Length: 248
Image (cartoon, rainbow, N blue to C red; front, side, top):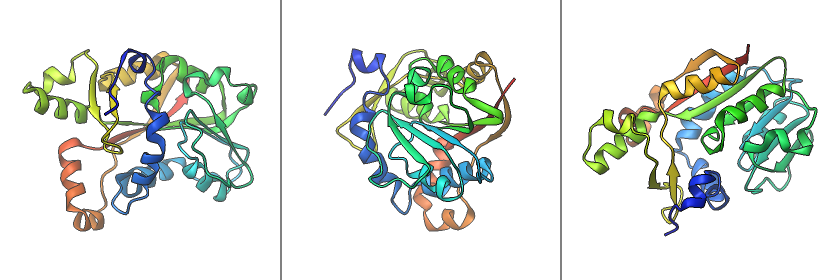
C-alpha cells in the first residue's frame, strides 16, 4: 500500500497523480454520490452558462467542464495536475496540466478572466488555500463568481473518532493531520489536514470573498429509496458543502 510521507504532507495534490483515473471510474457508477447529489447541485448553482467562460481548477479529466461547454459555455479552461484528460474535448475547451496551487503562475492563464471559476472538491489540494483563492479572485470577470465545494468536515471527525476511540469534538477541533485509505483505490492512503467550518469562512474572508449562497445538498427522494446504502452514508457523514463566492 502506498502510504503518506513528508513530501505528500507538504504537497496534498501528490496522491491525485495516481488516484485521478480511479476517481473517474468511481464517479461514473450508477450510485455515485457525485452523480446523484453533488453535480446536480453544482450545476444548479452555476445557472445558465450560455456565452460564459468557465475555469475549472482541479478539473479531473475535464468531463464536467465539457458538459458545460456543450451547454453553451465558451473560452473555457480546465486545469488538473494529473493530465488524465478527455481524449477529444469539445471545441471551446482547453485542458492544461498544472497545479491549482499555482494558478497565478500558469502562462496559459495570464491576463485571462472568467465568468465562473470552479473548485469542485479540489480545494483541499491547495497548498496555500488563501493564496489560491486570491489568484482565482483576480481572474473573475465583472459579476463573476467562484463555485467551491468541500467535504463536510464532520465526516472526517466521525471517522477518526470511531477509529481512535475519541469524542467527536476532540477530532473535529484537532490540529493533527491524519491518513486514511481512499475509497477510490484501497492501495493509496491520503493525508488530510483538518479544517472546521470557521476555517473555511476565514479563508474566504482573507481572500476578499463573501458568501452569496451556501448549500448542503441531499439525495432526492427517489434516490433514497433506490440506494438506501447511500442514504445511510449521508445520514452518518452529512455529505458536502457548496459555496457560491463573490469578490468584495
